[in-house]
Length: 119
Image (cartoon, rainbow, N blue to C red; front, top):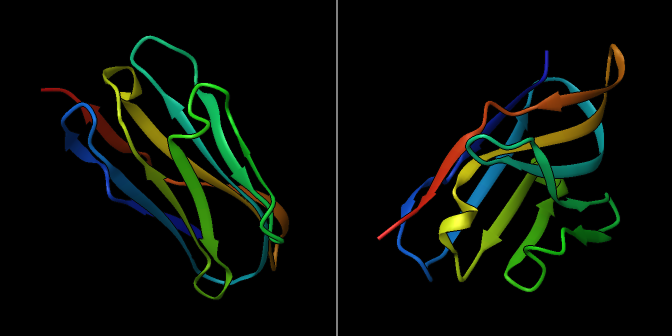
């Protein structure tokens, strides 16, 4: 069984920074794409950033230049460094990985971590 454990959310002032992490635990043979989504109050979940196993990245236009996604393949962990945070970045942030386990290729989701940007 594969589980994703997220950490790093919290309350931060506008202009501040946070680093989120998401670690995959369990029997997982390989991980392809790792993704961060976010869901703001009253809004649909939106794709935030992605990173392939080879390190290619994609960012939503609203966050490009303010955030950096990275990964440590040896630790099956993806990170999201967010800078210059704005109140509109307040959301629950979810990670997702596309991984190969003994049950085949599946999407695995984290439990979500709350990020609140407020003074």
